[in-house]
Length: 236
Image (cartoon, rainbow, N blue to C red; front, side):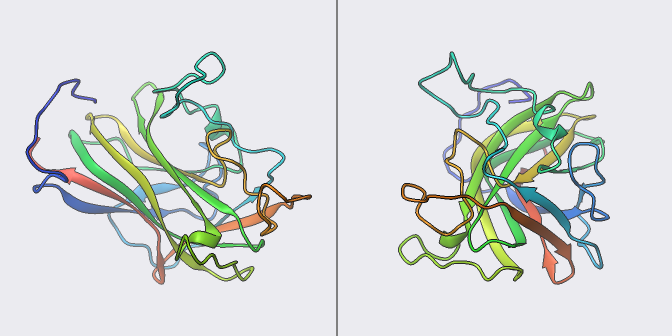
């Protein structure tokens, strides 16, 4: 994508791709597209965390993405994410406009240092290509349920207020971020109905009788270097 061309490769991931870290930065106000969240290759030092309130009764809606089977209600594919980015429960981090093309081909991950006021919650991430006219094109996305941060077989609830490291798998993509575009990362706690809502109580979602709101915090400082990790292909 971006270059709008097909290319065949003999290995996966691409041997020449290098893992580059784009660290999260802000003054503690990365909420929405109007916030102060940025991405850069410089590691953070002393910065205030970002906070948002996740309410399962008001989840962030799914807008496009890898959907199937019900396109009349939920259109799949590339969609403008700006309506989602108007919400205060979506944190937005962006690079400056790129000075040259940037090819990203391969698995995408996010190293996220976060805490919650709840014993269980979700964290979501979305990679976005921002065009010069503002169009925010979704590329790939992922989610992690906190209780399964270490093991799918042995879930473990959170200690409220304690910071943990989460690794979010955003699957893979192949996109050339064109000169003048920006790389963007959205962080939140829901992407509904693509993913079922975490009710924040620690109960199984099929048997839970109540919900709770969660105040979730994202850390980006010297001890908690949250970062978007991109497989960058040089020289293309």
